[in-house]
Length: 469
Ligand SMILES: *[C@@H]1O[C@H](CO)[C@@H](O)[C@H](O)[C@H]1NC(C)=O
Ligand SMILES: *[C@@H]1O[C@H](CO)[C@@H](O)[C@H](O)[C@H]1NC(C)=O
Ligand SMILES: *[C@@H]1O[C@H](CO)[C@@H](O)[C@H](O)[C@H]1NC(C)=O
Image 1 (spheres, helix red, strand yellow):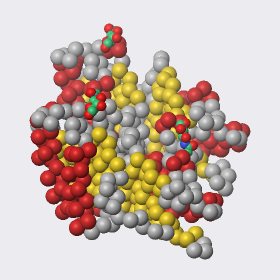
Image 2 (tube, helix red, strand yellow; image 1 turned 180 degrees about the vertical axis):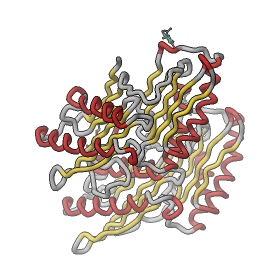
Image 3 (cartoon, rainbow, N blue to C red; image 1 turned 90 degrees about the horizontal axis):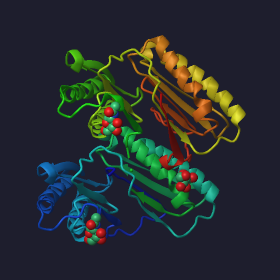
Image 4 (cartoon, rainbow, N blue to C red; image 1 turned 90 degrees about the vertical axis):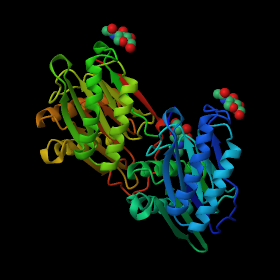
């Protein structure tokens, strides 16, 4: 099951709502039923006081309690703008209430205006989760939706970028206000859980804000309480089956920690482990625009997940938006590999394909020439304005083991496949083992463009195609 996270986003108009000690909502995962006499239930009893004291002290805590299959992971966080007394009393209520509302579940979450608390037996720390969302909207509509939405959009941009400033400074919190002349002021607040990286926070806020048109449309006040960094795909080469007791399998387990530490340190590693026919070659690389925290957490996930998804293959690859990891008994370093590809395209078409394709082609040329410059470490990114309101964003990246020529070759193949898989689509991603190409009509790379985008960033809007040799 996808692991879960959340974001807390509150928005008020004119008046701060009455403070209430009632929870805004809870989620009891009924696929994780336990009996009240189980060891997990006893461990929840032990974990909760730790969450209460940790969050009361620092406004945030993520910790775990117990061992093996009874181990629990817990997180508690207060809104960054409240007093430590309010924080402490909110978390105490949450700890009591969650046991009443979810007495028999190992995975439970509860949301209040001032705090949030969750626990589960899965290690969810650092993972983005917008799978469960609670939305509140005021029943009254605003009188001038156009001006309201424009002002709101600009304000959300401003505070979202405040929230993603590294944790120490803003602790995931962004808040602000803006005037809608003549009499009205909009107040808004957003917050990410503090275990999230900068990128995951930005992603979560983008998803939440992107849901405004669906849920909060023109309402005087709205909150979104909440999303997921699942892999985009994997390739387990079924012609390289091995048993889990084989020496190669043991070598994979040795190689993976080296890939994790190397990529976390430098954003890229290509290394090998083992000898003779059991020798393994491994490569891991992060997208060049992301922070080292985001990189490290992505590669850690990739190293875990690839063994789950390809438990019995010596040649395996896994793609995430922010990183890529592969290993094989074949020495693949420096070789262009576009044999297996995953394409994600937006289901929506652009309105003016002719102009769009001309601009897209020009932008791709420009960023390809960046990517092949050795100092850029395989990365090229840029944007171009299609109209006063629409901007096209694109990013390409080659794995850093490739020569300049091979990089150019991989990108040419990817872009050459646009007419087949991305034809006139509003957004598209090409994932090869040697390069990554993506374009969207909304900002998706760092540094984040503050320009507002209400484009549909939901993965539900994308379809994937796999191309095989
Ligand atoms: C878990 O328990 C709830 C009642 O507490 C029940 O409705 C639900 O069907 C149970 N789920 C499973 C998977 O057994
Ligand atoms: C490898 O194992 C998979 C199942 O994990 C099986 O479907 C496939 O046929 C096997 N391939 C070969 C070449 O034996
Ligand atoms: C985004 O796309 C999803 C899936 O197609 C759709 O359900 C949702 O309403 C769209 N949201 C917006 C803001 O258009």
